[in-house]
Amino acid sequence: MSTTMFDSETIDGKVIAMIVGQEFEDVEFEFPLLALSEMGAEIIVVPEARGQHTRPFLPDKVVTGRFGSPCPPNVMEEGNRYTVTEFDDLSVEDVDCILFPGGFAPDNLRILDDVLEFTRDAYDQGKVIAAICHAPWILIDAGIVDNQQMTCYRAVKHDVINAGAEYVDEPAVRDGNIVTGRVPDDLPQFCKLIANTLAEETV
Image (cartoon, rainbow, N blue to C red; front, side, top):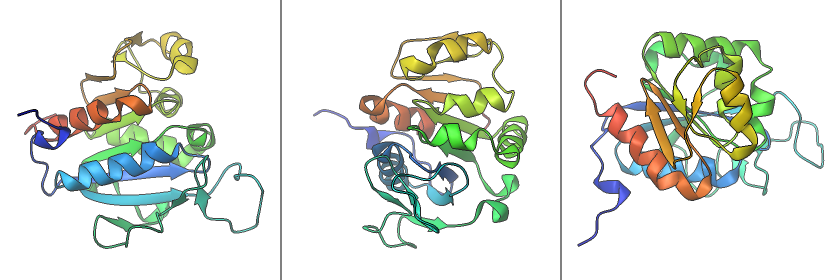
């Protein structure tokens, strides 16, 4: 009998904050939300509308993915698999992991000083920092990339290398409390590695 990603270590009670900016990669938000909640995590969805809005621009438009998915998702009821909070109400002490989907969202998030400060604080406190695809940009601008092994979408490869990391062309890579994923096809390995990291008593 084959195994699946849901055979990972249980992460019951672990709290994961997904910080999601405009133009996120739709599947890189929706798949981890489903997978990690199924493994027992409490998911806090943090829509961050600051930055460039998706096309067409409309005032007060909700955070929207590259392919039109809204955040929070309108096909899953809040309170079951996730809760929603504003970024200003998020506390590092209340989470075990922060997760950044990719797409174009990281380019919006990495110019927000409070998001970068939050990321640095979480990293310094030993929280798991998870980033896939383009999202290592946020880690670079937060100043927490230094000699780690990391993976990412190939367009970000030289940014990661120039920031001081060792690029590894693998689906998912963990180094310390940083977990990185490569592309959407690698989401099962990425989520499983996040879960296995969170399951350790000490990260």
